[in-house]
Image 1 (cartoon, rainbow, N blue to C red):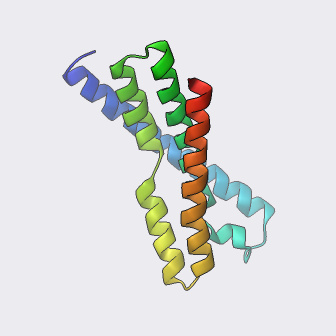
Image 2: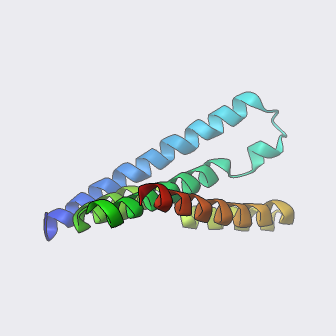
Length: 133
């Protein structure tokens, strides 16, 4: 694949990743709602976004690790990494959700969200690279 075809493949994969993000977030919200009270802290934390970013970091780390050892093509890296996984993960949503927590005066939850997601995401990426490489 070269030129415009790679661009189209990245765009399509990004759309699939974004749709997958919507599905996963909805499933997490539904699971939490079914198992907790309406005033539960778990319902007010952006756990779906956290799960998405951690699993996406693992997937990209795994892909990068595989690329370093098995000769995955540059095009596959672009489409799967930049398109699919890039569309799936969402740093901007995590940032806005943290800002919302802070604006609501929930400093502890905001700090936990930003630090927790960052630490878990980097850890997941490191694990993915190690397993892939």
